[in-house]
Length: 156
Image (cartoon, rainbow, N blue to C red; front, side, top):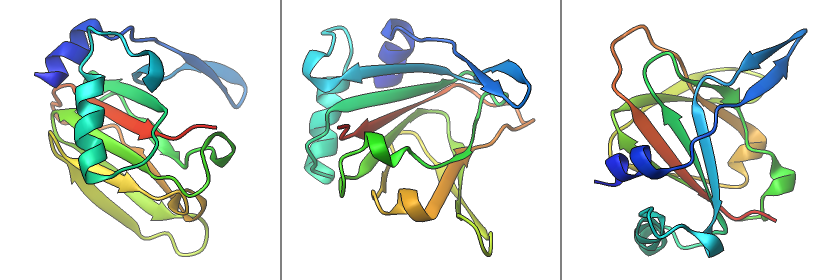
């Protein structure tokens, strides 16, 4: 229910970013909402209430990624700490199909952990983990139905 509602009603944006010597399409659709101004047409308030029951924090924003198929992805990265409130978690809700997230330490030994994010699953990443680890959703050649991730953050 949440997946279908978000897929149909979110104001999804297609972005481009400079990479090396050219501008490339971001391989997913993106949306972001301030939690104090949520559209009534979206189930984000209900989702936030359920997230708060499991992982309480003074969340201020919901950032969403829409992975349309296996070609959509997000490169290994860590969240920009200057935009996050110190000590607050990032809590991610996965909707739609299962996708694999990779997590690895930054620098040094680079063992990668793979986590299959199933529909309805919740993943909490600490503020501190953004200093020590990076995460991403790789492309896949396998047939891959759509997935939406909703990340609740405390932004400054």
